Length: 565
Image 1 (cartoon, rainbow, N blue to C red):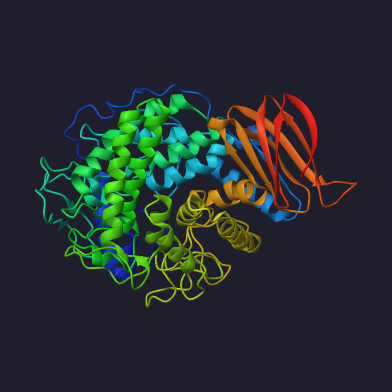
Image 2: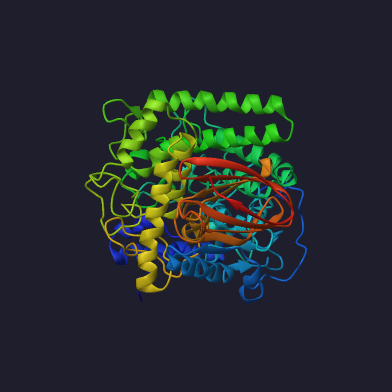
């Protein structure tokens, strides 16, 4: 019997470092148990904070039916990227699902196609490229199924059975114990968490630490909001997200005020042993700051100014602690903390959550940027790897979280850089990703779960035909960083940063309820300028950036022609 690499069959990837026989024995035992022993949870009415309770059946979208309604990119500089864009959508449509009868799910959804479960972390990132086709495809609504399964204390399991709607059994605290990690930190299953400097929270959590990772729902919701401008969506999700935040604050906060994680944050990373039994991760700590800030932004949009201020104060408090305890002045980098508050020695991509959460000072951000530009650490052929290349466990072929390049981590780096005004470097990294996955696409004809950092190849291991979060590159990056279209739906504005000298644009671009076709080509009378043709079904503000100059245009319903600055 052979195990296919990268399938994530509810297996901790850190088990990949064990001997194959031992790994298979563990996997078969744990997965068989989980399949046949799905325990009932103690709260009888999940999803009580989310108003959607039932699924309203409607036809599942088909690629053949909708291809001519999807945004259609024009990018003559690299037609292969356009072909890769359409391949990504073709694969994505294979992963759209209707809820199974009896699952209790309330929305159609896109699935990561790893195994029999839906995944929180994966789904949040998949919504980010689905946003560009809203409302034609199941995108942000995929998160509804997690909110519909939220427990009364606010917990949401990161992995839920696709057919049953039941939390993955291995992540259920069936023993009723205080917080522990089912699969531990690179070994030692059923490992307890030790709280230091605070009382152990009671009652015990309904889930294990393995289940409580990557609180990025609110980030995904705001990414959607900036594309759609849908305030009603924010009203729908605010209360579930606030209860989720409070549950993680209750169970994951260590006595030092920072937050704990285990192997499930970065599967087989060499950082994991340092987190054992209650160490604090720089990623989860920054993600909690991000969640508080995102909730504050949503509260502000909803007119809850007092709640917004309180949440921002909480974010600032944790930000201060991260900078006091996790920043190393000598190495100019953020590091995880051991259970005894010592710095871990491993330099990983986790530090860059500090940019996304706006934790870093300007000086710290410059230091993080310097590492992104350092070929000895993160500026590899395909960048950025998830483990610095000067670490002894770095794998130039990828090795999963020992150096592979992943769409989610690349995205968090890009968005974090933009927070600090490093837009040029953000675009450079996005185009580097497009270039390298494009080369692999030409060689293999498909997309992959992750990629090698030191060659234009799939990672080892990596799942093929993967969309999955890998759709972010060929879809979102092409539109935002290749063609240069970035919407601001709440402001009814579209920014178009024209960088290519060839014909470019997008037919049927969708944002803020508009469907817009835009094309730009070198102007016949002056090839240094571009002639832009716009066809829109509504009015909006268009801000053109070209050759270091900008121009604002009020686009009207109908067609018009514009000359770039």
